[in-house]
Structure formats: C-alpha cells, structure tokens
Length: 81
View 1 (tube, one colour):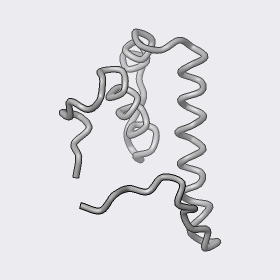
View 2 (cartoon, one colour; view 1 turned 135 degrees about the vertical axis):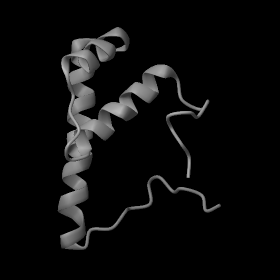
View 3 (tube, helix red, strand yellow; view 1 turned 30 degrees about the horizontal axis):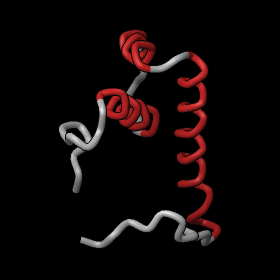
View 4 (cartoon, one colour; view 1 turned 45 degrees about the vertical axis):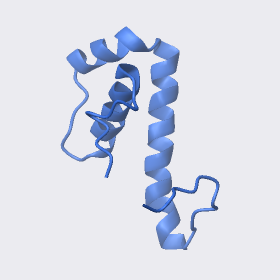
C-alpha cells in the first residue's frame, strides 16, 4: 500500500490535504488552530471550504452507499498489482 506521508508522488500541499482528510474522517482526531494555519499556507479560505466539502461528501457516500447496495460505477479503476 502506498504511504502518502512519505511518497514522492505527492506535493507538500497534497500531503497536507490528505492529512486533513484523515483528520476529518478518523474518529478521535482533531483539526486544531495550528493545523489550520498550515492549511492556510497552501490554500485560500474558499479552497479550504471546497476541500472540506469534498471530504465530507466522500465520508457521506462511504456511509450511505453500502447499506443500499450502491456499488462503484467504474469511473476510477485502480489497477491491480
């Protein structure tokens, strides 16, 4: 599995966005003022709002779709290793 924290495939801003998603998604993690200060170094306020909305929507889908049997539509196929 790819370790986004150390991968050279992601820029520092992308790794920060991934950490933000993880903090929002994982119960018990927080987004404190210091982390928001780091976000503001890479993203504007509107970008942070849009990023937050996108993360929240994916979290919603991950809880909404499975009980209804809604499966992936194949738009983003991840190649098997």
